[in-house]
Image (cartoon, rainbow, N blue to C red; front, side):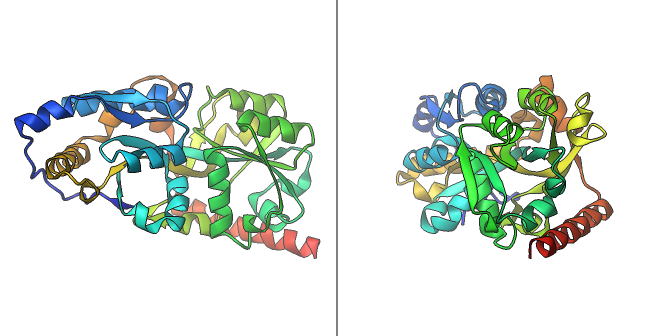
Length: 331
């Protein structure tokens, strides 16, 4: 399983002059598409933070997303890559040996799990209903990381979403929303940052779709390297109150993670020592050094709230009741 960096590690490796010079050679931080939040918002502060820590020359590099980033970091273990934590966890289940060659440096902001349905469809008002009716429902799932997330959710919850048999993979979140709105699917699924400036939030409002609370025990119990894969959080959608009710969306989200190669996977001893020093420096840096400064995403991160345990308990109970009723009506 992918390993995380132990918080108590202290910097023990000192770069030689040659290694320092080598560190200035361009190295990649693999992101995703150039128009995405990883590339345009999250990566630039990380490149700056790396340079301040004495590890300059890291360049934000577009890629095909989490699966591609994993492959690229395995091929070049001194590079960095962004990964949805649940996609990484799903990949690690099938690639145990390769996963040992990666290290999760730290996690960043959380990407929300969006499950959307038509407002007038009373059989898909709650997540428990969707899980209980999963066999007969038609799903429109955005491709890429969202698809991998959906498959991981099915894997860990075989008696819920794992029973879905009619899943159509569509190009992106916008297409998933439109497919549901036009009756081509009953439920749409995608993974994105929950921020009011996201054009898909406006689209949900225009198409008169509802967003469901994606929370159950199976999701909350999922872990990778002893880190929760999903976290229940509440996000403020501001003016788009009709989308979530009251302007606040409560759902589970999966953290964005930064991965790199484990020092033990690097054959050159000098490079391996430099990698250990890099891990120590990144781990010791404050979270603020690796987060966007200002703008919508910064407000999203600072404005998200953990769900109180009492409220979470009520949500889990409501999920179970809705799921059992849906199963009973389908039998």
